[in-house]
Amino acid sequence: DAKTTQPTSMDCAEGRAANLPCNHSTISGNEYVYWYRQIHSQGPQYIIHGLKNNETNEMASLIITEDRKSSTLILPHATLRDTAVYYCIVRVRWSNFGNEKLTFGTGTRLTIIP
Amino acid sequence: DADVTQTPRNRITKTGKRIMLECSQTKGHDRMYWYRQDPGLGLRLIYYSFDVKDINKGEISDGYSVSRQAQAKFSLSLESAIPNQTALYFCATSDFGQGATGELFFGEGSRLTVL
Image 1: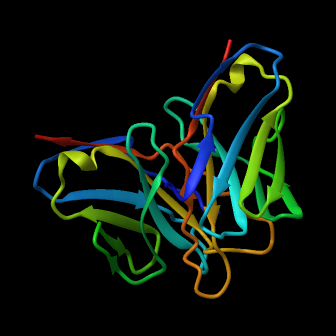
Image 2: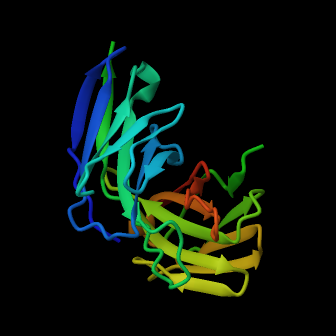
């Protein structure tokens, strides 16, 4: 799986859009970008994923650059409950080849400021 | 009820003791995983299983063993616990095949302290 690079921490004012960047310059053509978040010490929660097109769901939007070497997760109207560690990982959707080395990096600690 | 349930949620034990962490899921997924998280670090994969007859080592399997008793159950064992195995442990499941999203579904975690 490709390695990702994320800022260690970010702050965002409540009600504003939170933009979390992720670099994945070695991403392969069949690898997707996934975002998860972990609130305190709870189990990580899936947010969104995409291959090359921008994606949006009820939680967030995912913007992937045309060369696919970086992406941005956007939380459009951040609330205090969005304070969490956000993980960006790249991987194939699934595989039968035993390469499910689904390692999460250290992520970005996002703090929403009242 | 949670889709992925871990027991116990918290456990304190002594060095040398055998510990088993259990995971059960109602997602109907074939693929199950055990992760470990240390303070300030991300999640590292310990073992994973693609189906009942399939067990694979992750990046940090030394000192651990697993058992896949059924599609819905995947247990992690520490045969002789040591203090540096103190961590937060997560079980996860995923689907596969045409139409699968590849999303991981996590349990709420089992906090293990080895004294």
